[in-house]
Length: 232
Image (cartoon, rainbow, N blue to C red; front, side, top):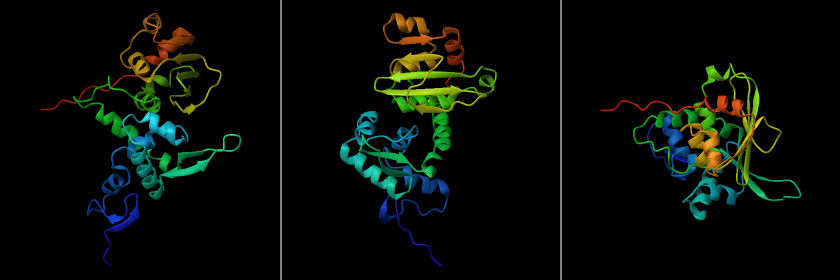
């Protein structure tokens, strides 16, 4: 039986990009269009409103965002939901299968961070900063750390990371924490990967910190960018 090249999926009823049965080829068809994979990244920590997604993805137009969300819905990666009263607003969230994209996204990000062309000083979203923590954590060192809750406030977005036994689940929201960083994702990256001292960031007016400073320093020390790849 001959397999058809036409498929009803993320690309709609159009010809397949690749005449290739490899799962990698299909992955590119599902999330390879510009912005698609970043939309999935932004939804990794829970459903978001259309406007919130647009604000997190600098440069994307409303029209393109609509098209990409529709494609991701057709691909069964994203689903539309309605928040219960009193909100009663539509949000976009990942399906259970969509959430499984976290590991490939983390692996791809860690690989690309080794490129000599990677510029860690470019802007990044709050979700991107949080996902980088889950990607770059030194798991072996983290297993020797005491359990702790770390809060992050990036303007209207709040997250709680709970370190325990080397794992670092992160959720959106506010809770009682041992340490809390109120800053921007860019400054948080400077503190985490550039090892900008917390006291210096505070003195510069770029950070409001509360909590156990020694514990915070030990937490920050768990994260480093990978060494650059040797290229010819």
